[in-house]
Image (cartoon, rainbow, N blue to C red; front, top):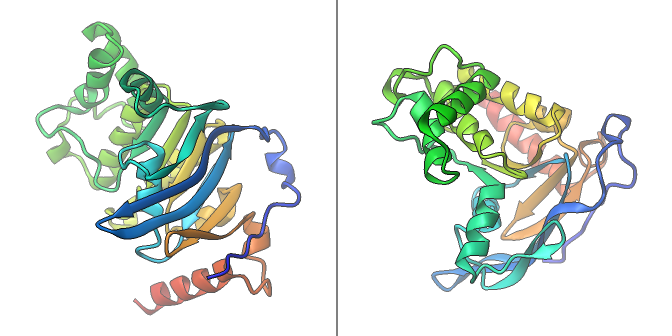
Length: 269
């Protein structure tokens, strides 16, 4: 399939402070799993302070790409560059340092059931950064407060709603001071009424200037806050550009067609 790219020609005024030089750059990433090509020569740059939203049908390669950006899934060929330096993924020390700077939020929270919210956030601070327990707990509580869970620190995952669990997961990632945050469908496992509380936290992080890449089907959110939408299909980037360009009425883009079908299916439910 011949790919057509739509790039951002001009930036909207509210995004004028985004730097053009990428913090993280994935170059020509190829991934094959079980003999099947999953990602095909995918490249994406992430400027400081930008929110890039990945959309596309199931099986497009969005989750695989996000996990490849964190090198949870190794790539067959390509490069990851952080602050202009190629990451040597074969060097365990360098890869370990890289992963500390690239946080990951999953669909299913990945919390420790035997730890309360404070300890779920603090454990990486103690194990990875070597903080004392008291210091780690103070930082953990600060991050829980940041995501609106200052009164839930002593509760265990079984006592939290899905939205609260996801906010604990976000607090855990933020406590590590990531340069880039990757979010893989962070609201897909939530009941509809809980989606808003998680998106509200992500909205605040966008305003604070955190660099993020997020896979989602929440198109109203993408329209309002994404600096760039990246449409993937069959392991390739088909289109990318601002929401104003790709979703403009009458634009006749693949992205616009996909979103129209997605919204139609939601209305029919």
